[in-house]
Length: 530
Picture 1 (tube, helix red, strand yellow):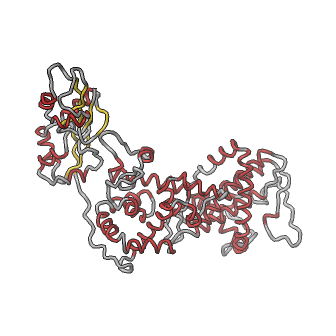
Picture 2 (cartoon, one colour; picture 1 turned 60 degrees about the vertical axis):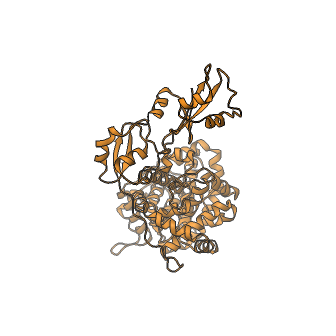
Picture 3 (tube, one colour; picture 1 turned 90 degrees about the horizontal axis):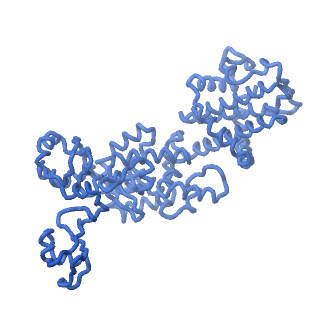
């Protein structure tokens, strides 16, 4: 029985060896793409029960250090469950290692029955699955030990004469090497020994961003912190429920300055700066009336889903943040450019990323440093704004927010702040759940019938004439015999100048019977045409 200290001493050599193996077997796996893809998808998805994980941990302890009251040669029940004992099978002939041999991996099983070989491979798979569970709990040492045992099981199988078993060994070796590399990468890039945490490092790039916040961007930083009070508590709650680091709640400070209406040159919008395609991918609806990227609650849920997907892809939070900013495709292209098929630490990629993306991660880490010790960096952040509280009311008809504001006697800015997803401050033509200030829901329900409906917009929608939004509404009109621009302007409650500008008419006297004119309207927010 090999001691735990011996395994630990040999582990670094094994990691280097496994990296080489991974590159070699990646090529092999590509050649047998169909089989490997199916095994890769199926093997890791089997979730072990808590009892089996505990049994694996017990087996690891028993293999490396015999507890008091039992000799090192004895085998625990948990070992018997997960690893076949050499004395239990008469079909496996063990060759004694020659003098001077030290490594247990040099003991190889000679030709035996296929069942015994399969049992060893099954045991390796169970140890691999146990390592996944242990890694998810943050127990990195135990996870690595489980992978050591999985690899030991593979090395005991002599499969030269069985192509199917050779393929199983190759698949398991690739899986084990990938997992080991991921664990070691996370082990040395995280804080508090948990692979889910964000590394709060300090280097010259982060120091530069701190100086920026201390000087030219000082007002932006302080005002963003004040605005954060409206949303930060809800964001932290959502992150806790999703099992993500709370520090991610400050990502909107870098993204948008906690401005829910922030719009970037790339057309990214809202607190979390989603572009339309990514927002749609994560369930954010966008139509003529509503853009859910502007809703802080809905966009927070979408951002969490996106961050979870990126973390499953990269495993390192700093690399995840870079991918969130520039898209996972850009980061993957940089990684592929290194001709290495495993995950990198962000700082290895820093110089190769676009400048905006490269600055993004140091800005976020600089934010965390300042928030952790504001006095150290010369900040007095003051009081944050209070969270917005509300009630909800279902509105069945289409109304303007300013009409509701007048009816309730509240501030004009309050309803748009509570319902930022309404693009033109008008409820959609379908039933809509409207947020109103506390104690105002019953008042609104009692008076909703007296609030005028936005009939012009509703009529055009019913006829199917709506095309898109603008600050001015339009209809199209065919000039009749004897009509002038002044008569048409009076009919539609607009002006001759407005009609002339809309139709590029330089001489107001020259309009013809049958001519089609675009008529700007005074009150609406929708452009309509027949």
